[in-house]
Image (cartoon, rainbow, N blue to C red; front, side, top):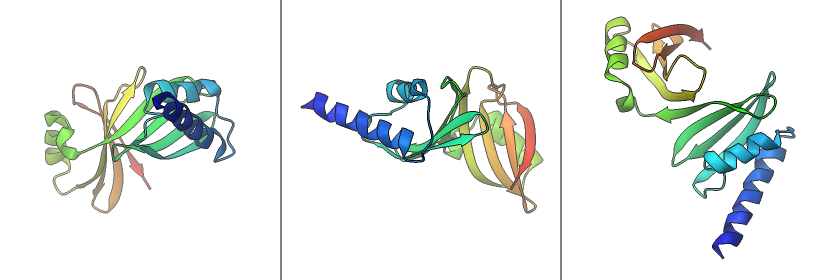
Length: 149
């Protein structure tokens, strides 16, 4: 019975992941999602694929946390973004924010997992009416910032 439920969940999720948005998602990406990223887990919900340039992006919710997975045009995994509570930010990140953006409001914090990206935490803030994305290295030191919409 467990096997039947598992197969049903995998086929349901795979079908919704690859066809709901009429995007031809590479099979390799779907296999990676199902094997490594909660693809067949009943706690996974709100899964939507999009194509941005030559990359594929999967946004979904797992255990009430928003997650994003990014794949290249061949379906190879590039990176994941996981929404995290502000309390999980490294102390170096929170110190940087207090010193450099004392009146800012944190909109969202993310933990980035990637083999190639030089950053680990990404923090979206509003400071003096401007939305800014701050990127921090794995050790918590500031890396780069960019204004966002």
